[in-house]
Image (cartoon, rainbow, N blue to C red):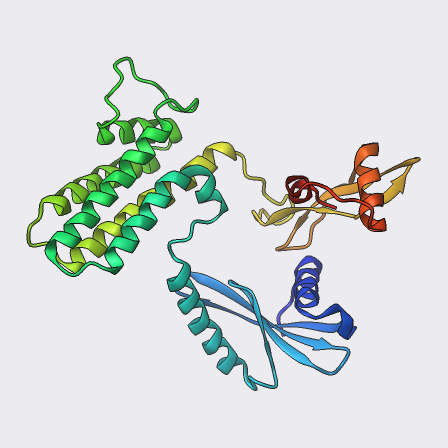
Length: 311
């Protein structure tokens, strides 16, 4: 068996509970961490979960899923299936942006999906050339979205919007002061732009050529997103006990404290289990009332308000 933190065990318990029908009243009685495996740059934690009904599950992370031990007798068997399932899902949804990409490169990514769709039906050289044109438009869209952003260090002489390579150099300089990252972003953007133009005019373009340009274009969108996130979160916290980055904010749930209702908030390290001092966060009266109405079944909010409300 492998050791695990309280938070890690709690996350697995909550995950299994979320996948179990409430009416079954089947509860988790034991969680055992039975291994960790790293494959293709991704770490997968493996758990053996016992239920009150006698049912047992394998739970494997990244992407987290559970499997009945009635169907998969051995750990090797279920891990092999899990990896295969992940590959299928990743291929199926590889063009779907995550939440951060939607926020930072959403419009450019929609154009990128158009390039991928064009690739799916491409057969002749001119079709593969068209993929290059679409990828070029992806990069131009990214430039147009951010030429006037507040984080951009505007030069004395402003380039034209179509001067993508100049703008990517400005973006690289604006997004990071670290020379290695700045140089990588600048070089990657310039080379990718040159590849899109080359493919657009290459009369002997092949499927492999178009695939290479598609992958390079997606990489630009991913690196740009990561640098934007890095700018917004420059001081990533580390655990004072073990120096891990795996800190997450936790809450106690709704409680009464000194005559007020609210929650106690604290940071917890999923690596070593360290917890910070708790701070009380009082809820305003209107939020308390909404919770009461919600619990009693009398709250009927607009859809947008329901999406924003978190208990």
